[in-house]
Image 1: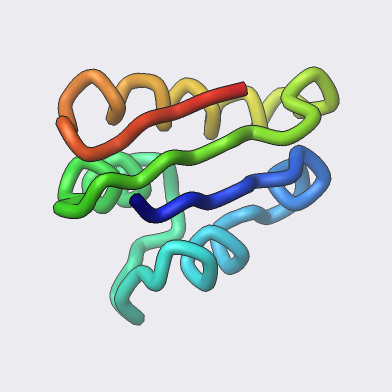
Image 2: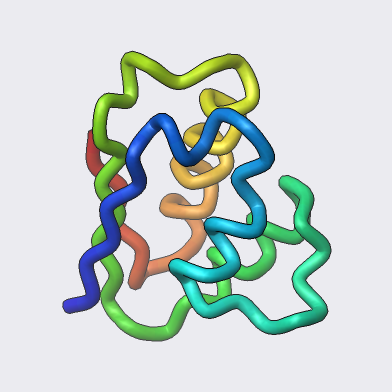
Length: 82
């Protein structure tokens, strides 16, 4: 199983370049919440994602977390933890 740890500090200010790097998203990744959701629901290998220090997320970071939670409901390979 692939494991990814996402520190809250990396998700608060323009997190999309960081997410693209960590997840290996393609160059055409739209770097917005809709594009993030689309790529997360396309994950095809078991992947655990841990939000480290989730209590320190700012408002956009919390929206990122919600996208992950929603994608988790629609992708059998995505597992989200806090």
